[in-house]
Image 1 (tube, rainbow, N blue to C red):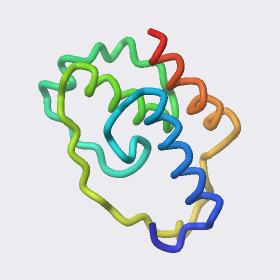
Image 2 (cartoon, rainbow, N blue to C red):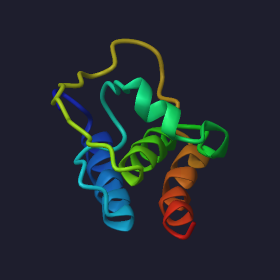
Image 3 (spheres, one colour):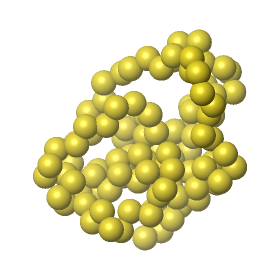
Image 4 (tube, rainbow, N blue to C red):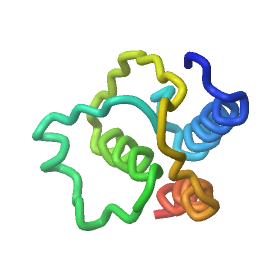
Length: 107
């Protein structure tokens, strides 16, 4: 992660660790990067049952694919500091990411 503010770096690392521990998913980065899905995976997931609305959507989709027995392959990417615009990270977004792993696990 190149030139990220320390706060953003920690939020990413801790958020991923938190979700991984609760859900038991072997994937290292549940919230970032490019996601590519095989058609078979998407067809196996009940997309109407997906509840996440923000960044937690990435956590939920990865978890649902993994629960259906599909493999997850990660290709490292390097994020760079935002050149323009502002973050969409809000209290609501963070709150959803804190609650969603428990909601999924208790299903």
